[in-house]
Amino acid sequence: MTDGKSEANRDEQIIDIGLAAPVDNSRPRVGRDSEGTKRDILLAAMHEFSEYGDGGARIDRIARRANANKSLIYSYFGNKEELYARVLREAYTQIRAGERELNLDKLEPREAIRALMKFTMEHYLRAPWFLRLLATENLRRGQTVRQIDKISELQSPLITQLKQVLDRGVASGAFKNDMNPVDLYILMASLFYFPISNSHTLPVVFGAQVTDPKWREHYLKSVQDMVVRHLENAPGGA
Amino acid sequence: MTDGKSEANRDEQIIDIGLAAPVDNSRPRVGRDSEGTKRDILLAAMHEFSEYGDGGARIDRIARRANANKSLIYSYFGNKEELYARVLREAYTQIRAGERELNLDKLEPREAIRALMKFTMEHYLRAPWFLRLLATENLRRGQTVRQIDKISELQSPLITQLKQVLDRGVASGAFKNDMNPVDLYILMASLFYFPISNSHTLPVVFGAQVTDPKWREHYLKSVQDMVVRHLENAPGGA
DNA sequence: CATGTAACTAACTATTTGTTTAGATCGTCA
DNA sequence: TGACGATCTAAACAAATAGTTAGTTACATG
Image (cartoon, rainbow over all chains, first blue to last red; front, side):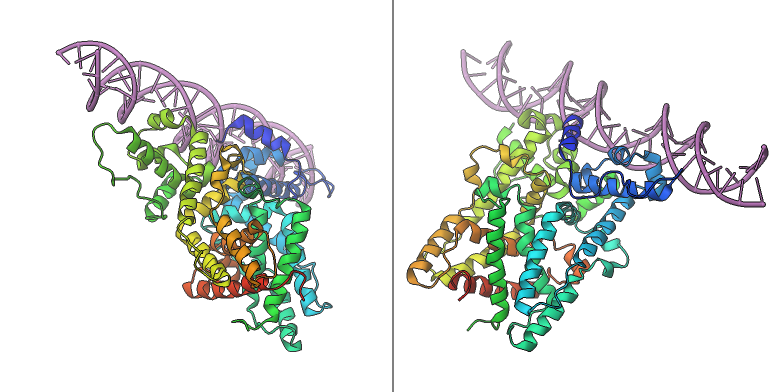
């Protein structure tokens, strides 16, 4: 299962998981450079934990990938558990930063919802490593996320935007369904999380071409229509 | 991370994951009884792999839980990898068997969709271990499910039912949106998979009460309305 | 230049864990 | 009965792995 050889091979095959390169050379390294190394370790650990999960992650591989040493990892991060916690926090930070780039202010409410949905789908597609980390943390029953402090920072900035869009929609009469922004966020996340995170089993079991860009485009359009209509109509139907 | 003591504790806390009891005593055991033991091992392995994932699963614990011996496991199943494959197949078999109990023939198409959605949600809630196994297999990039033969048996019987409901709905004029049954299945699965499989991170990050039966009831009603309306309307919006 | 401190490394330890081996036990049927 | 094969077990092996230790290197500062 956790066979050394096959894992090594697997590691080679995966060239890019959408994270920064194993070692970050963007900032020039002068002499001893703890900050750079520390960041390299964190990035390598993000890669490792997303790739292999908590049980399968290996400190040795993280060290190798970061061009660092095991005991350096321990001196910086304490132990594997704490390193994982740092990874999880950093993952949320990065993903939320990405979400902050969307601006819906100028769009008519219906169009804003469509744009938000398109953005969400593409965001998930861009960062499969984050979905993997989410899956891992939920398999751990949220053991670690519960302990992270300043949890509010983990909350998506999309919630705020969503609230504004909904308010505008209700005010203008475009939306009759006065949904809770968090519930709407969950609804939208649901629609993209499943087909993307399960993109390995779905084609095998159902022959569903969920990885085909054509399918995705069609799916997006379909659920955009569905959700917008859902908001346009008062709950309970009729 | 995979600390012996804490895992032992964790094991105690989890009394019931919805699987059959660790050791199946329903059938009387007479003398040496390979079939019973073999089944016990499989059930124990299902528990173990759903609980700890592929990397975290331990043969020792499986043996203990099955009241069996490690080398017995090896003689029956070859190795950990093959045991995992058997677990995955058995999991699909069990879950699909459960899905076969739903009968929508007598229901009016709109009501049938609502019933199917309610059933799907409850099915997922009843079998969280299956969602965990799905998540695990997707973290493995479907490595194993791809190798299972007779994959068609893994496909959900709900697809067939869904097709009939859709056909009836289109025929009667109730549904104007002629959706592909597989796509509709994915849509419905999406809506319940995310809030249930991520039920450990969502409350922490968003304060969403996704585990509260009240929330679930409300959510179900909302997405039932949404999907039925989606089917009633022609794609592209009128 | 000497010295203290932080960055870094190699080698080691203790434990865990998948897997194997050699053998004991039991039911069966010739 | 007795011997054969299937069932089952205890103990051990070898590889992997989290974590530690003891030491070396580079740099800044007085």
